[in-house]
Amino acid sequence: MDSTETLCYYRPAMEKKPKILIVDDNKVNVELLRSQLKPYQYNLEVSYDGEDALSKINVSPPDLVLLDLMMPKISGFEICRSIKQNKDTQFIPVIVITALQELDDKLKAIELGADDFLVKPINRLELTTRIKSLLHMKSLHDDLDTSESILISLAEALEAKDFYTRGHSERVAEIVMLIGKYLGIPERDLDYMRKGSLLHDIGKIGIKESILLKPGKLTDEEMAHIRSHPSRGYDICSPLKSLEPCLTIIRSHHERIDGEGYPDGLKGEEIPTPAKITAVADAYDAMTTDRPYRKGMNKDTALKIFENEIESGQWDPKIVKALLDVMHRHH
Image (cartoon, rainbow, N blue to C red; front, side, top):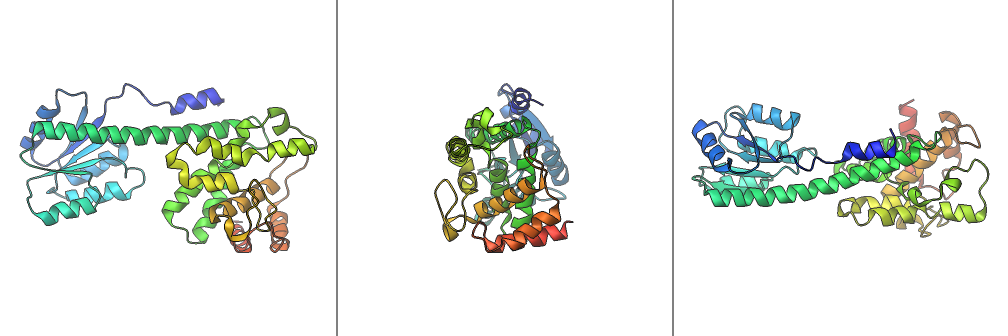
């Protein structure tokens, strides 16, 4: 797949109608909501019990959920909890619609992540205004998500130009995740680390292809040009607010514990842990894959080098020990 095809794959459907899932076991209530929303350009779906609602949400996520709290099989509270605790669905807006007047029920729904709360009987203007507002917020998030996907696709397309680097960032991300889990890093941070490691070389888009693909030894000037890729990648990704937690990986994955790295000459604890993990994963994958100027070494040889160089000042010893442990386990 070339870069043009990749970009097309991630292009959102601009004319798609927002899909709203109505979850209510009362058919009269469902029909009332249908009639109130009929004049608008929405694709309406219905679930009459909690199990069916969760199944539909998992198979084909809607853009917004209108949720009754008192449901058979699985309550609206549990549906809301499930949506908001799943990283694949957590940004779907949930409007709770119920006849319940109790403050405790409202607070419980809000604590579980409900985005809005309406009490029956519903005012149509209030309902449609809140739906429009939440769908707008969802579309802004989807645009950011699409932008991330495009950047990752560009990084993959860049690697695909060179047989020797194809799949490098994906492999690095897999190793980063193994080390991160081993070190007990929280799942939310692991998600940012995966994105950051997939994008760690995105700055090479700004490197001259003749230098990037040069089979022989690089001159000092060419090496300086190559070494500009972390700061170039940082500049490319920093406008995206959603990638802010990933920026330290993109900028600092070539820093060294002894301060001899680049681009900022950080040392020791100045280097963020996700960047230090990515540095080790990056080096391991580089050692074990072929390059135009050398054959990749086998895994045992690479791990032996890490073992011997654990106090060299290049990498964090704690992270090197984690790499050695997880790689020996996965042999």
